[in-house]
Amino acid sequence: MFIRSIHLENFRNYGRLDLDVGPSVNIFYGNNAQGKTNLVEGIYVASSITSHRTSKDSDLIKFGENEYKVSLDLSDDDGSNVQMSSCYYTEKSSLSKYSRAGRILIRDNAPVDKVSEYIGVCNIVIFAPEDLNIVKNAPAYRRKFLNTLISKISPSYFNLLSNYSKLLAQKNALLKSIKSSQNMPEMIDQQLDFWDFSLAELSAEIILKRFKFAKLISDTASKHHGSISGGKENLSIEYSTVYGAVGALEAFLNENCKYDEFMHKGLSESDYGRIKGILSDLVLSKLKSVRSYDIDKHISSIGIHRDDIIIKLDGLAMKNFSSQGQQRTAALALKLSELEIIKMFVSSTPILILDDVFSELDKTRRMSLVSAMKNAQIFITCTDRNMIGEEIDVMEGADKAEFYCVDNGKIEKMA
Ligand SMILES: Nc1ncnc2c1ncn2[C@@H]1O[C@H](COP(=O)(O)OP(=O)(O)OP(=O)(O)O)[C@@H](O)[C@H]1O
Ligand SMILES: [Mg+2]
Image (cartoon, rainbow, N blue to C red; front, top):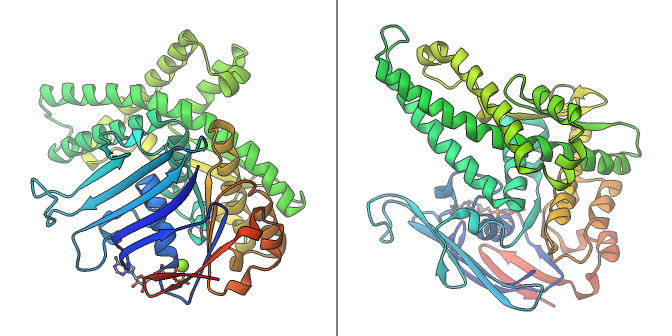
């Protein structure tokens, strides 16, 4: 699948942009703060709904406006046309029916009600300076990395997550309204029993997916890391979730000799039911054990909303012990692993975006990045078109590269 044209309306510093792009390498250059990242962010948002650099949709609306729209016209691998567009509006927009912010997703001229039916249509992997956050910042960045990857491959996972978030928000609202765990009405206790049971059921399914993908990331990222760093250090990833859950899952898989089946084919329905039951019972008992504490503190102190993946270099957590250069190499290895895993599960080659990444990487890392990009449509941003020299020579499709100059929210195709 490749993008034929990009359309932005009131998105960041673009009032309106309609741009045809080439099927192989597209290079956008221009001075700082002209709209290069905004353009690739627009492409990413049109396919994935969320931005790679902010979780606030309202930040994406052009200053002074009340809605943005981002659209892509694509060609599928069989040559058919695909159109997708995402529009977000604030409560002040004329599109808002009940004075509430909202979103309209459209695919091939028909509205799409479920996000899960939109996000897997066109897979884009973005390499950006923000990738460093995955290694060095808070667990939320690593959860986002894991969630984005799994949702692209398994849209039903997105539904699990959004159901979990809705239930958790309802439970948290209830926890905030209870004054203390002493003298709590029986009815509230029963209501909490209901939320906890439902949360535990969803948690078990989410843990099973996250465990599997964390293992896949660990294997593939470690391989990429080895080839970038010359095999001097060993990168590994460990999934961290509700205490005892990983141990229980590993024990089940090992005792029943189901590890390979789980990783490669998927468990049978009955085995899946058994392990799901074990995990949901475990999560439920943990939730009950902290109930009084959670009521008194008005929080949900335990649950998969606190999950993390611990990134280790030679057994030490990178967040605490690594240098900037080691963090950059690990971030690149993680993103290359994302690309490899998507290719394992999805038939069409993902579209790639490289936002200002060449200037941050040394030659070995730049070449590792470029050599992973075969047969893909690529969007590259940089401040100087001459910055990309050797890299472009080894890139497939480089002879057909298209250049565009970005200047204050306007884009001109160059010879
Ligand atoms: N919501 C918005 N509405 C209007 N302008 C915005 C909005 N958000 C950001 N901008 C403007 O967009 C510009 C930054 O654009 P962008 O991040 O795409 O720059 P860039 O070309 O990638 O620059 P650099 O080379 O520094 O990375 C800034 O001038 C910023 O004020
Ligand atoms: Mg930029």
